[in-house]
Image (cartoon, rainbow, N blue to C red; front, side, top):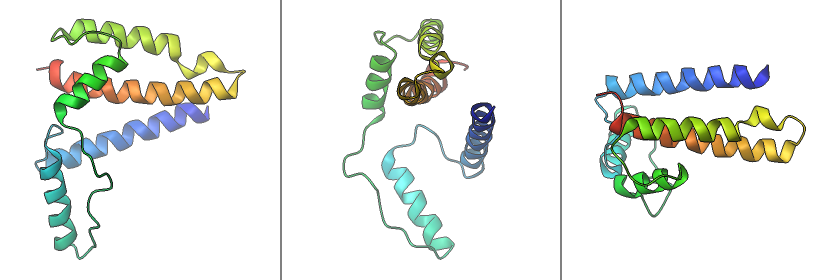
Length: 130
């Protein structure tokens, strides 16, 4: 029950973030430099402090895409149906609910499926609904 509630909250947060991106004219595929500039501007505008990027090495969109296709265990393709089919297959095999009795495996499955969700969301925006 708690997991389902957590998923609803996550979904709501993602919707709010997406609406915020649209409101402020941000593109999810923006480069990291554009995002850093936006955060600096918002901090200056609202009197907050901006400490800079938390990571020293940033991944480009190409690097992210390669990593996401590796995570989905498929070669790079433009066919969204292939991506979607593999995503569903991996989610079904690794869903945390399949590991009710083993807490360690359940946590690993939660982490893995979270990464799958991020990869699928990115690839869906890139190759999915146009």
